[in-house]
Length: 176
Figure 1 (cartoon, helix red, strand yellow):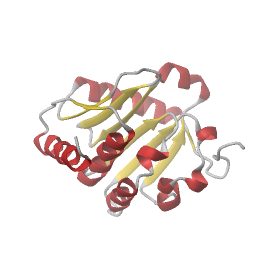
Figure 2: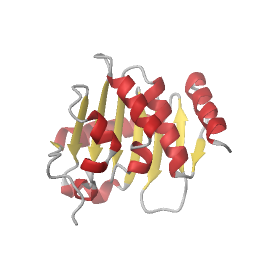
Figure 3: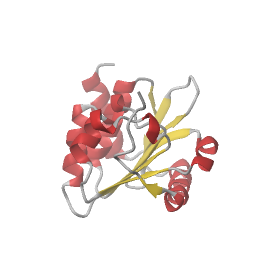
Figure 4: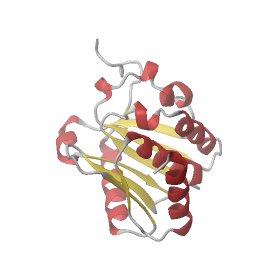
C-alpha cells in the first residue's frame, strides 16, 4: 500500500471513528499514523515511548503537523519517554523544532516502572490510538473510536505521568 493510500485510510478511520483496527507494520506507517493524529486531533496527544524513535516522531510531516497542532493554546501534547539515555535530542527533528513550546511537556518514566510497561502508544483526544507491544514481532495497531483499550491506556498514562519527572534535555543525548 502506498504512503498516500495509507494516509487516506488513516484519515478516513479518524473521520469515521468506527473503531476499525488497522495494522501498522513499518516505521513509515507508524510515522503516518502519528502525523495524522497530530493533524486531526482537537485537544490532546499523549505519547508513551521507550526511545521516541526519530524514524517515527522525527519525520518531517510529523514534526510539521505537531508544530501546527501545538500552535493553538487550547491544545497540548504530553510525552513520556522510558529511555532518555538512548535519545540524541540534539539531532532529533522533533526536539530541535518543538522543545520549549509551552503546550509540550516531556517527562521521563521512573526506572522501576520501565520493565513492567513494555509497550509504546499514542492517544489522540481520548478516542484514538496507536499501540505496539515491545519486544514482539507482531505489528502495531491503530484504531479510532470508543475502545476499552483506549480507556485502559489513558488510565495507565495518567498514573505513570503523575510519578514521572520532567526530562532534562541537556542530559538526554546518546552516549558515545
